[in-house]
Image 1 (cartoon, rainbow, N blue to C red):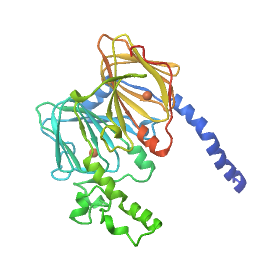
Image 2: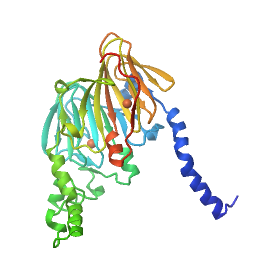
Image 3: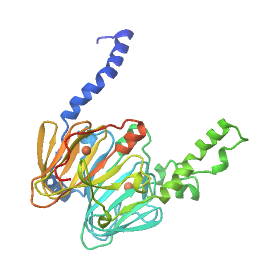
Image 4: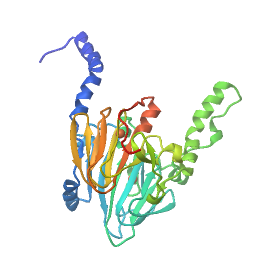
Length: 344
Ligand SMILES: [Fe+2]
Ligand SMILES: [Fe+2]
């Protein structure tokens, strides 16, 4: 076996950092973009939960994933949940395509139907229940890969309390959204000086976050979306902190393109996964073209130019779920606008 010198080993490690960005560009270009509904549908017959865009299946997306699932009539996601349901340290978006039901999120009930969307707050206890006679079909997207990469992926399920690491510290800790329980806002205070104030703010931070999460919006009804013209075409912001959500990682927009028209072209440093919710079209990603139909999924590689074309006779509607907010909070936001949409 070849034994490397200390110098060789550490030079190699340094070159790994230098080379990474260029290597990553290659992985982005090779990334799978189009996932056809007909392939997902076949698999959904055999199993009710099919991962579609997922790094564990070869996707180059590092920050979020998307799956399809079915909740059979008069059952619940998780089947045997009775009280708290489960919670996890990811942000989650759920978009309902078929069926009717309700969710209980931190003790509050939200009723939903086709076209409605839930933004499940970080580490809130939740359950999703199909109340109807037909299956619920939905997609969900979470920041699971991001939380795993940060070493902060916590998943607590009422059925497996032996794996809880935060919720076992009494009744208060089970109700709070803060890992380990919040304690008291006054806990970190000592007599006034600037450093003591700054430290007390740090101790109180999670309690304030929890209050903001509890006050924030959770459910979006399809009928309440407001479309307005932008350089990218007609857009409705669905989930964004600027419209009442306390989201730090996942944002959602809905784009609408009339028949025969095209969106603007842009590229950005955040991951984006699109669900085609109506109509048919074509997307150009850098130098490649893909034709898509309703219920297909598109995984847009980081920093690759992309533009959408409606090639059908119905309005084309695309739900874009992105990790722009996570990049904003890391100081890594960059969006370049190219050609503008041809209908605004
Ligand atoms: Fe969940
Ligand atoms: Fe985009």
